[in-house]
Amino acid sequence: MDSIDNVDATSTAVDNALGSDRVDVTAGSRNLASAVSSLASVQKISLIGFLAALVTAGLIVLLIMILVVRERRREIGVLKAIGASNRTIGVQFVLEALVLVVLGTVVGTGVAALASNPIATALVSSNTTSTTATGRAGAAAQGAGQLAGGRGAGFAPGQGGPFAGASQLIGTISTSVGWQTLAMGALGILLIAALGALVPALLTAKVRPIEVLRGE
Amino acid sequence: MLEVQNVVKAFRSGDSTIKPVNGVSFSVEQGTFAAILGKSGSGKSTLLSLLGALDQATSGNVLVDGVNISQLPDTGLTAYRRNDIGFVFQQYNLIPNLSAKENVMLPMEFAGLSRAERSARAAELLDQVELTGDVHHRKANRLSGGQQQRVSIARALANRPKLILADEPTGNLDDETGELIIDLLRSLAHGQNTTILVVTHDLALAGKTDRKFRLARGRITEEPVGTAAGAHAG
Image 1 (cartoon, each protein chain N blue to C red):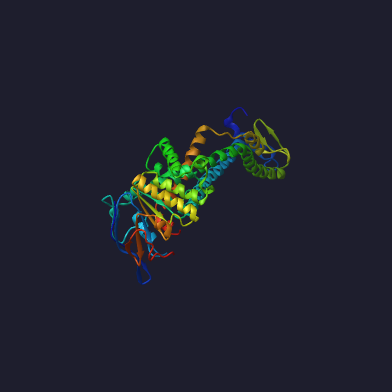
Image 2: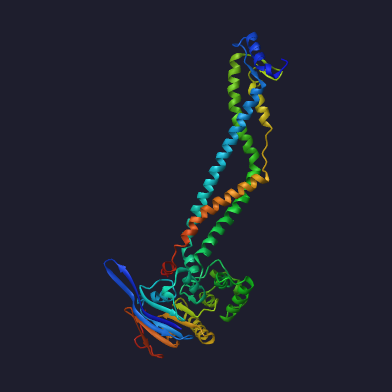
């Protein structure tokens, strides 16, 4: 083969010469496409996980702050009785939620930094394992073969197949956190936390000091 | 000066209407130490919450230095509670996880004073109610009942209010501590020209005030000072 443009023609020729029932001829470029496809699915899973985590975090903050407001109705009543405005109390509750979220973000970032590589490896491995298994099954039925000139031209079971290239390509992937990603993630979670804390903060405005203090 | 003009507070209860405060009128000069006596359920605390803008009267007017608080909007009521009155509660109602000093600093924080000003005045007020030393930095939930009530009084004085409203301030204290609190309130009324209105059924306390009022069936009457005639412990 003297040109990359001849890959398909060469593939067909090798296939015809050796017999398509005995060998499976695959171009190396398809291995790369398989690897990229695996990475794309990992990226999709990560994005869905991130969005789900954001929504869950917002809901958790919302529920926790509603419970906090209910538990601290008396304190809210007392604060109002001694001159605190609805705004002052509402802002205090939002700030409390944000402090909790910032602490959670710092801890979460640390855990993510430690766990991201093993998780990425596990995700990549599970994606490539399934494609490699499919390839091997096909190869086993077609007998022996060999790799030549960047093209898969059949292979024995256990020697790897056309997807072994993909496994090797994406086996070297490692994760790292850029400052931009970190800043965007932190901003996102703070916004979600602020939204989650807003409803309970508004609930504090409905607390009437007399209702709380009447229970004395 | 505090003027209460024909104040009514009515509640619906099923088909009937209950009026724990029914056409109450009285006035108290600035710097007076006064008591409102009455049985439990006579409407004393309801009246106090109306005077303290914690609740709204059904009708009538409450004037503090000529300002009718019954007609103030919410923001005005908040400012009134912050600047013009101080509350002393039977249950103290301190913020338990804050220190004594931080509790006293709270109303000043709401009034916008700087941290240095708040800290200095809180220390001065705690000294004034005879709480000194490390008690300033002790958490409220680690103070005795008498100490908590002193902190509560110091907190009520924080923004130099014209009027202090105290709801059964000795109700949870032993006799000796209760008497100390009464003496403290009396000295504050006379020494700082602050009007102090105490709701109580404690006759010992009422006997030390400048004026006494009795609330019964929603109506108020003034009793001569120095008499406990007709007083009912409740």
